[in-house]
Image: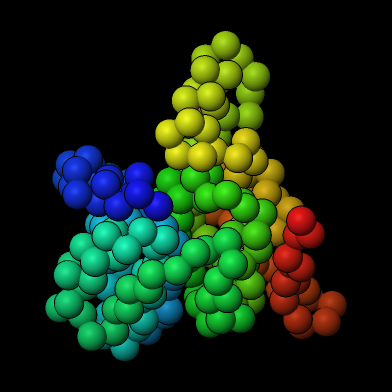
Length: 212
């Protein structure tokens, strides 16, 4: 936690200034509508909060959450102007966000830095309504090359990377996981996962929390 508390006061402030393109991509891919509820997982300093609040409007709901108290403190200051935005300090790996409460969710560079990636993704899937969608931009170091071996080691030391492949875990929890770009990056993934409704029963295909 100390790493992310420190980051909230230093380089994350700089990254905020260059996050506009990614934020716009997330909003566009989620196709948020006025009145919807959206969950921002690993919100950091809340750079995406203004765009989310604008997209869902005054009748919508935004819940942003992060593990770092200092990240949350900065995000709460940013969110003060919107009464329908809530910023929570919580661990996405063991937090029940509320079953079927959200129309959409977003996780930007968040899952891969969590100690229990399968559990965090299962919790995100559980939080979505049938037809809900999750936009994910994250590190992906699944290919075994000299460069990725070095990056895996560095990421493990810096952020506690568990080695879990975010895209594989998304495919375990969601029936539909679609790449945003045709050409997949060597070290990153940009995908939209969708919670599909079972047409035979009319119920959502809600994944169970992975064991372990």
